[in-house]
Amino acid sequence: MSEAKPASGAPPAWIRTVTTVSGAVLLAIVLFVLGSALLPGWWAAAVTGWVGGVASAGVLVGLLCGAVFTLVPVAIGVIAVRWHRPWRTRLIIGGVALLLTLPLVLTIAIDVASTTAALDAKVDMQIGAPSFTGAMYAGALGSAVVAAVLILLLLRWRRSRKEVSALRGTVAKSKETDRARRQREEAAEEARTQVAREAAERARERETRTVGEAHDAEHATSETPEPGKERNRGDGNAAGH
Image (cartoon, rainbow, N blue to C red; front, side, top):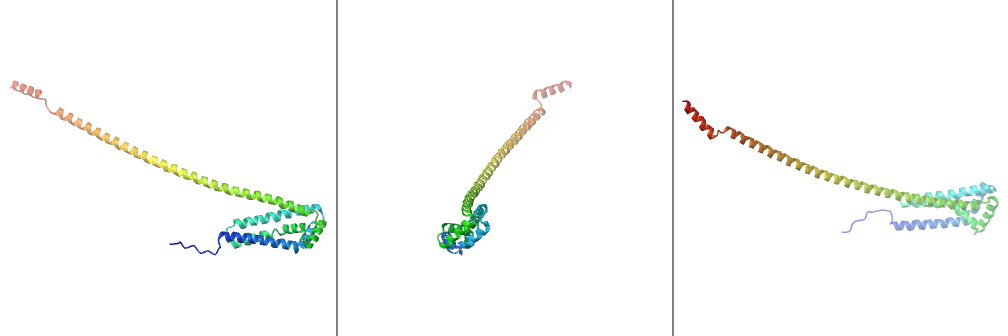
């Protein structure tokens, strides 16, 4: 008789994985299309307004944008993967993480300049935001390395915690085994001591009984008159008369 499977509204794990990956790829394609055709002018105007044509400001803003728009999406993506919530919720969170990479996608699209709008935006950024693009690449790359190191450290820390927990369980089990063994040894020693105590008590009882019997025999012997002494006592009485 087959066991009834529990009813669940969530699809199988492989379907969720395929759906998540497909959705992420599709969203990335859409973002790239938007970044290539529709949004380069808006992003170039925003960046030139922040930098104001100053190269040092372009480096600072570029590093800051590269770090923020790399670390934040990575952190949100890790939360979406590790968070124990329904798969739809995690898919939405993953979409938000990808959406936050839009500034980086726009910068790449403008730098590639595959469309007329992107080419015009690239010229505007070269004039109004010098050194911004290279600084943003550097910030994104450095942040990606930092994020990878942090994720590796987090995974190693979790593995170490599991190993420590397993080791503690082994030590606790070993202590419990030793405690049970000591209890058995103590019980056996107590049983042997009890047997020895009972044997000693029986030996003392036998010794006491033997001594009492000997004393009774000696007392009975001392009260019984000897035949020679009884005859001598009788002859003495006859001579007196």
